[in-house]
Structures are given as structure tokens and as C-alpha cells.
Image (cartoon, rainbow, N blue to C red; front, side):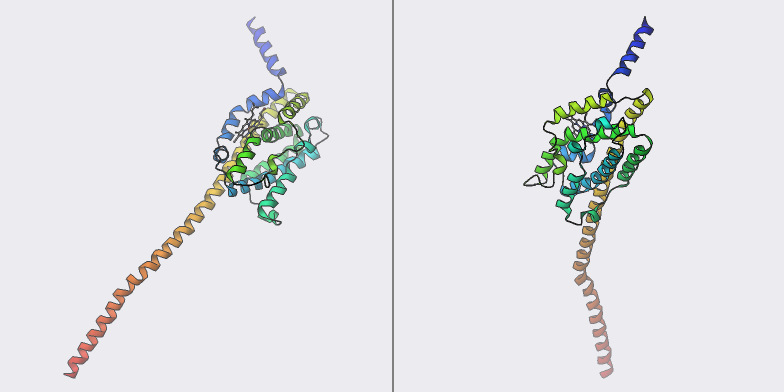
Length: 276
Ligand code: HEM
């Protein structure tokens, strides 16, 4: 009886929808992602322009790799059902935002932490070796952008004092009239993907990895910003030191003058003695 019950539960678990399972296995990672320093700055309405520009650079690299791999595998049986370039593709929007903030030579100004390169490397690797894992990455980025991302866009506009939505195309999905309805459609498409038990486990593991890669990117960006902040601080400290030295300069002259005067007096005294 007990064994029967346990088998039933196992079967039910196996039969559960991929969209439900993926949400469950990434729940804890989602909380960790939300609590990275960068995401907290967004939520507190404290995101700065340098922070946002740096984030856009990494998103550019990530979506370039993700969308290139989705395009290349668009006919793969696991990818075809969740392939929505017209509705979801982000690369062109990010390019527009980067051009808005960094000018026409924005491509030369792309800087990313090593974690972004690792993320892109993983995307290209699975695109070649396990295209079904792309489902996990597309889910993590696109459903995230359609969920919390919508609120974050409005917060970013306010915190950076932007008057219009220019520079914020990344957050806008003109091809999606209702994000909630679209998410429902997307989940049902995910659930229609046929996967062996092994492949399904692989996709679930990959989703946790996708969140981890994002967290590492956010942490890497924060480190870059704090290093930039420190070097600014350092040059400030250096200039303070220079000012302090300048201020000390007259003080260091007076003993010299005193010495010269002393020598002069001594010489005059000696000459005076000779004159006598
Ligand atoms: C400031 C940080 C974030 C906030 C406030 C936030 C908030 C949210 C909210 C409110 C939802 C909707 C939950 C629901 O419908 O049940 C959601 C869903 C989601 N978020 Fe986030 N999120 C944040 C960061 C992230 C990040 C960094 C990622 C991934 C890189 C991410 C990925 C997702 C995904 C994949 C979903 C869809 C879950 C599902 O319905 O299966 N989120 N988020």
C-alpha cells in the first residue's frame, strides 16, 4: 500500500508540467538573484546611470549569444515550440539603448566582467551540444523580463531621472499586448516539449545554472563598479595629497630661509670681525 502510494507520487511528479517544475526548482535561486546588490539597487530605486549602462553591455553580449543559438536551433523539436523572435527578441532593443547612452561608437565601449563571457560560452556550448537546454535559458531570461522586468523598467526611468522611455527599449515588448497572457502561452508551449526523463532533468539543472550564471554576472558588474569607484576615490585621495603638499610647501620654506638668513648673519659677523 505504502509502496503503491510512493510510486503514484513519483509518477505524478514525473508527469507534472515542465513549467511548474522549472519554477519550483529555481525558486530559491530567484530569491538569491533578487537579493544581489545590483537587483536591490533597482528595487530601492537607486540604480545609477553607470550601473545601468554596464548592465546593458552584459545583456547585449548575453542576448547576442542566446538569440544566435535560438535562431540556429529554431527547427529543433525542443526549441521550435518556444521560439518567439517577433515577440521576445531583445538584441535590437539593447543596441538602441546602448546607442542612446553611449553614442554611435557604442560597440567600442562594451565592457563586461569575466562572468558574462562564461555565460555566453555556456550558451554557445549547449546550442551545439544540447539544444534542448536552451529552453531553460530562454525561460530564465524572457519570462523574467516579462515579469519583474516590467516593474524594474519603470523604476529605472525614475531613478535615472529619464524624461521619456528613451534608453529603456530593453524593457518594452511591443509585440506582446498582455505579458500575463503571453506567459501562459509560453508555459503551455514549454509543457508541450517532448523530453525524456534524462533530458527533462538536464533542463531543470540547466535552469538553476542559468540563474547562477545571472547572479555571477550581477556580482561581477558590482565588483567592476566598486573598482571604478575605488580608483575614483584613489585619484581623489591623490589630489588631496597633492593639495596637502602644496599647503605644506610655504611651511617647508621658512626653515630654509631661516638657515640662509642664519648663514648670512654668521658670514656678516665673521666679515665684521675681520674688518675690526
Ligand atoms: C529585482 C529583481 C527581481 C524582481 C523584483 C523579480 C520579480 C518577479 C516577479 C514578481 C515575478 C512573477 C512571479 C509570478 O508570476 O509568480 C517574477 C517571475 C520571474 N522572474 Fe523575477 N524578479 C527579479 C529578478 C529576476 C532575475 C534576475 C531573473 C533571472 C535572471 C528572474 C527570472 C524570473 C523568471 C524566470 C520568472 C518567471 C517565473 C515563472 O512564472 O515560472 N527574475 N519575477
